Structures are given as C-alpha cells and as structure tokens.
Image (cartoon, rainbow, N blue to C red; front, side):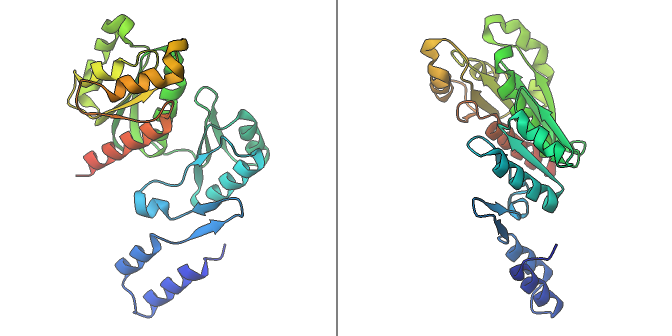
Length: 253
C-alpha cells in the first residue's frame, strides 16, 4: 500500500536532513486519516494516545462496520469493535478475517490475536450477573489495550461478604472498574476499602424506578467515598479504556 503524500513528504525531509527523526515523529502524530466518505479513519491515533481507533458499531450498517474494520486490520493488523452484532462477526469470517466474538458483551476483535497482556493490572468487578455484559466490555477493552485483567463478578451489596473474597485484588490492581445497576451502591463500598482509583459504571439493570441506569448514575456521582470516577450508563468500553490508561502509566514509571 502506498503511503499518503503528506507522509512521504515528511520521510523525504528526514532523508534529506531537513528534519530530525524526533521532529518527524511529532508531525506524524497528526497524520494521516483515510477518508471513506462516511467515515474518516484516524490511523495515527495510536501514535498520539498509545491506543488505536475503536469501532462503535451501533448505528452503523453491517457494510459500514465491515469496511471500517477491514481497513483498520489492513493498516494495523487488528481491530476492536464494540456493540457489534453477531451477524458482523459472521460476515467478517466469511471475508477471510480471523474474528473473536463475545455474545454477552458484543465485543469483537478482528485480525491478529491479542498478544498476552504486558502492562499493569485492572480489576473488573460487578454487582450482579445481569451486569456481566457491561463488565466484560470493560475487561475485553483493557485486555485489547495490553493490560492484564482479573475479574470478580456477582459481588453486590445484597451479599456483601462475596466482595471480601476479592480483597487481594482490591490491593493489587492499578485501577478497578466496578459495574452496578439497581441503586448503584457497589462502587462506593469498593472505594471505601482501597486506595486504588475506582472507575464506576452504572448499568441499565433494574426495575422501573432505576430509570434504565439513571438512579445508579446519580448514586455513583454522589458517592461519599473519594477516588471514584464515573462513566456513562452501560459504557463498559469507556471504563476499560480509562482504567487501562491508569494501569499503563502506573507500570511505565
């Protein structure tokens, strides 16, 4: 594949001695993107942020999602997609791509297998079994970003003793993701038991007065325990991404 003209110009300046390698890297952090008409793929996001572009499939047609994922795999070797329908996984496999797909979290990884995690440790906890899909989205996102993940599920406040089995994880993890629906109390409890950053994820699990996660969201934002950051309802991806950033920074020092 031919390099874009703006990239070639930078490389020529390096070869001619007009630009140092470090200065060239600085320029390349902002170039290039691929204009697909319906999307502009940012291939140098990983240079700027250490994390590649991720495909959010909800709202996209199967054809659009497939085109974006195939382009990312062609350029980067692999791609992560969230809220992906199983039909997309089947379609990509039919096109000859290697695909790992989790039905619960609807997370799809295409292309090369995710290498063994090498950075830090993120603990992912959830209150109930119904919260597992959101927790798994967080866990698989962090793993894709190269971070080790340890899970501890179904440990909500209705049976608080179940959380104590994770006490070693609460002290060992670089960051903790805690997903909960209903009244959203679990992140406050976890935040009061550890000195690790807690990323709280409200889920849309619960009866009518939970308002599809709004009650949990407000409870988490009003948590009395300090050290808690809150992402949007059901945003396991955002929680896993943020926790992975913390874990990588902690272990890179």
